[in-house]
Image 1 (tube, one colour):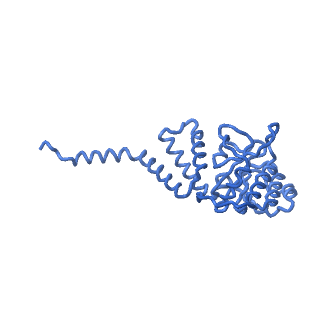
Image 2 (cartoon, one colour; image 1 turned 180 degrees about the horizontal axis):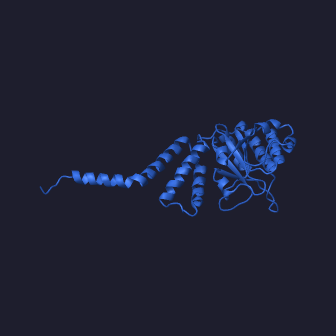
Image 3 (spheres, one colour; image 1 turned 30 degrees about the vertical axis):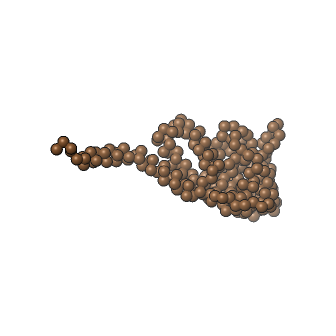
Length: 257
């Protein structure tokens, strides 16, 4: 199961931290490392901190965007150390780990960590179905990214040792879900449901709703079809409806004759 866990580092600042993350992954039996931006991963300090996890550094893949890095994942879990309007539903690793292990039986599961100085921003969080927060002392909530990786992977490692059943849903890849949200955003802006000045506020709420439910590929196809039809009607429907009404009126028999 843990072979389906992917660690994603967004804009990592220190190459030594990348090496330390690789070492934590090696300790817990995880090998899939993805990097979004940031510095080089094969520097002297990265290799020195990785120790015997050089193979993970060598195999790390780079992506231009977080969206690309998680496109093939069925579940994407973001990490945060603070609360707020878009982060209030965060749960600790111990609570999420069994659910993540269940999902990892049949799908890729990504855990996303942000830059060391400020963490994931709201745009990054929009690509995550769940959020995870590591409990820590209020005097200093922020953890080093390698420490945070180890804590999360330890909980997953322990959970994987237990009897965890498969999920009851077959999650759609995140790439397909993002295409759905692209169309949803476009259509909901056209109908005025989203505030054009701040469309992502409501869209993030919809993302959380669908993230909690979990979308299968069939669900994504149905919703895509729905919003595609709405979009078509907005562009063509009025004219088609008027033409049908005109034709029906012309074909209606004149009872005065």
